[in-house]
Image (cartoon, rainbow, N blue to C red; front, top):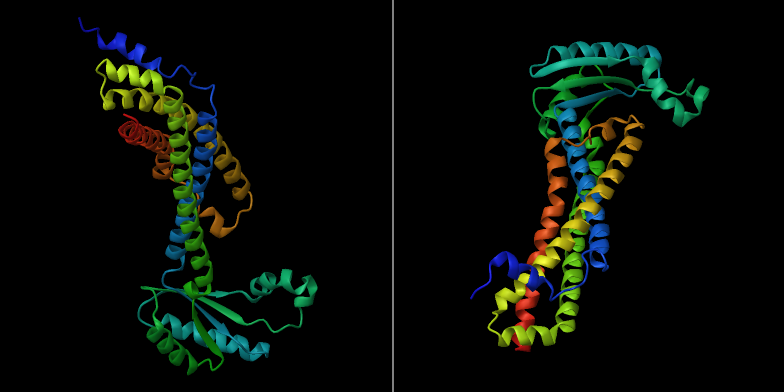
Length: 298
């Protein structure tokens, strides 16, 4: 007579008598998942920082009046401001007060040492589209007629190296996640093969009684899945704690770029799915490892 499945399921699990949290695998997986959560959060935050910076700087240009004489600098700034307002495709124009520009340089010039240093006049303009090289040349020629010392720069070009560094950090986070996934699979593979070696005689007896390789594999993949899930959930809690702590520290900086890296709802969902992905990877690794080993053993 065939026994009910809910009875044989418990009996099959006895092939692996080890308790779920007595071995090192759940704790190792917890550490890997925690690192993976932190890495994924960093990569998502970097992506949001880059997207927010590009959106803020899209269409932005800065005009500098590089003139040492204050009277001539102020006159050229007023003329350039009027000419910019008359240009088609210019959405907004703002002349940065000279005192504000000097205050921006004060920390680098040592407080009061900013006095007497010729600070260029700055005009912040917003165009209807991101300016290309041809449009920048056209604006430079147009402004040069009334402000010979004017220099036009696209704001996005200033942060080109910063964007490149952010993209590199994103790829670094992806590479770290891939390495952690490989390490997790290696840990599960080692633990599964160790369990197979310890229960080789029992498995041989079960095979002689008619058990198939997939049935034996289900025993090990079930145990690996439970261990991986418990470890992954612990790692998720640790990782989210670290992410929230780091996020609060960066929020205290109040810097423009950093504030654009706040995680959204989609990002938190991605982080919450990491334990499920880790558990699925552990189950798949255990199954493939058992089936491959059984083909060589029997």
